[in-house]
Image 1 (cartoon, rainbow, N blue to C red):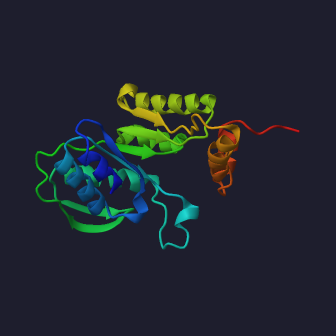
Image 2: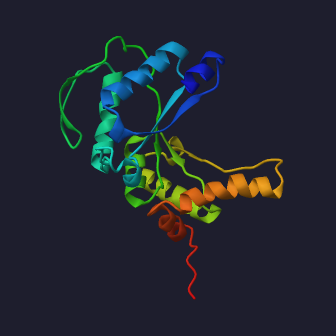
Image 3: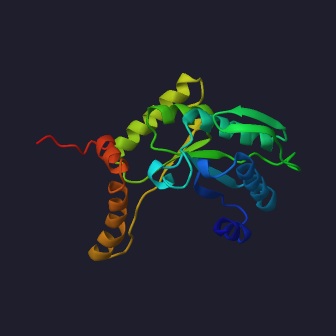
Length: 212
C-alpha cells in the first residue's frame, strides 16, 4: 500500500518491496502482484524475496522454503511473467496449471534476494537473482567477505559479477543526541542480537568472538 502511494506520486524513482517471505505467498499471487505494479506504474518495481525466519514462522503452519524451492519459486514467476502456462511438481508442491493473463509486453521486474550471503545462499543468488539486499549489523570486513563470495559464485557460473547488484541496509540516527541515538540505533542492534540463532550468527560472521 505504501509503495503504491509512493509510485502514484512519482514518475522516475525505483520502488522496491521489503523482503517478502516466500513461504507465506503462493508464487502465482506474488507474480500477479508484481505484474500489476509494473502495469500500473511502469517498469520501476523491484521485488524482494527471502526464505523467512524459522522463529517468526513457528506456529503459523509455515515452513521455510529450501534453497531448491527458492530457485523454483523465482523460475515459476519469471515464466508466468513471460506469459507461459506453468505445470510444476517439486519442493514447492503440486501446481497443475498456473498462468497470468494480459502480461505480454510487460517488462519483467528484477528480483532481489534478502540474505545473509553465506555459502549456499551466495550460490543461489548468483544463479537466479538480479540483486542482493544484505541486512545491517555487518561490519565492513564481514560485508566485503560476503561481496567477495557473491562475486566468486558469479564467476563460477560464468556470470559477470557486476550484473548482480548488492545493497546493504545501514542503521542511522542523524542529528540526534546521544540518548536518542542509543534509544534508536543501538536498540535496533539489540533486536538483531537478541533473536535466537541470528545473534549468534552475527557474532560469528563479524568475528566478535573473543577468546578469554
